[in-house]
Image (tube, rainbow, N blue to C red; front, side):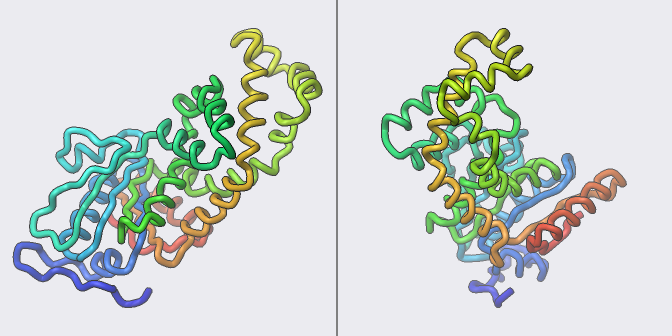
Length: 290
């Protein structure tokens, strides 16, 4: 890494930072905090955000993608939502903002951004399968999380974005989401789902899963699937291009990764697995905090 662009605050009201932490906060543009559940990962992300705002002349955003939504509690706030909220930090040289990613709102924003016209946008937003996927499906947040990180970094509003992720393996699912999105648009499944209507419905209806699903969920089930994926495919070019840029951001030299763990054997084993996976993906691991 290059030398920090801004010097730490040495005022007596702010305790001095550990040299490694000061280097991390001073040189990074994005810090992704990962770790097993229950080890203080959210508290660590919040503490890094407070330290960055206090010691550096930086505009800092701490963003949580943890479905447990503990960041507000860690900061003593009543609640956090999809809207960015300024947070007061004593003796701060910079500023601190907090937000939580709301999956449904973030998906809606993505559709509005990429839809080729208003008619397709409105049809996607009204589609029943889309509503179900974006509000109930456990992995529906993975890709929009990375979109939100990209927006925060590219907006020019923040000098440092700190991301509090879900526990280890869920965090890896988020990091892999841009690649999976690109692969999805080239998949046989999408080609089947967006084939000409009659052949598509006949092909789907002949498969055991769809026979059962159609009986349970009603006659409109296959139609909703067909409509959603046909409309979604109209956004292929901008979404694939964006996913490529998001993937590059996650591997950027100014994006740092921090693993938080504890001395418990299970947590240490999980942290070791996470460190190995981050290195395999060639992400920049800067610190392990215990």
